[in-house]
Length: 129
Image (tube, rainbow, N blue to C red; front, side):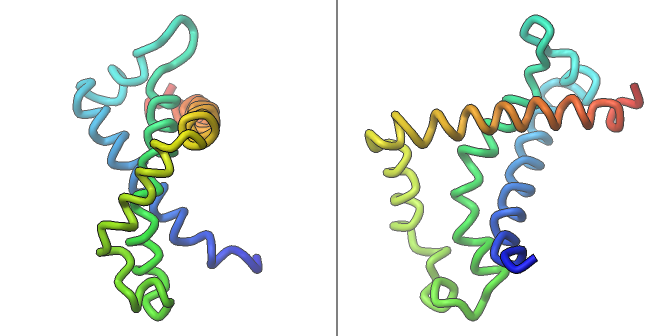
């Protein structure tokens, strides 16, 4: 419980990112049933794709969610969320050798595994199956 408040901005950023990605994919697919039916062999595609997209895109929301959750922090006082260099740093971390060899593969693996588990867990609730 001690570290819970520190995790709040990251949880909000992840939730917003995954909601936007899911909404866009569902709209493109034509509804939740059509989205759930897209598979690669026996494995559903929607959950892992949403998981990977969330893992890769959500760090771009963290400066803003940190500022919203902690308005009196040094980052918020310095308007870090509105500084383009912060977002360039995130992008450069992805494009660096460490990003290509270490960060992105870990994010993709973790995101796809989490997305698959969440997909399989939520499917009965969303589709009523």
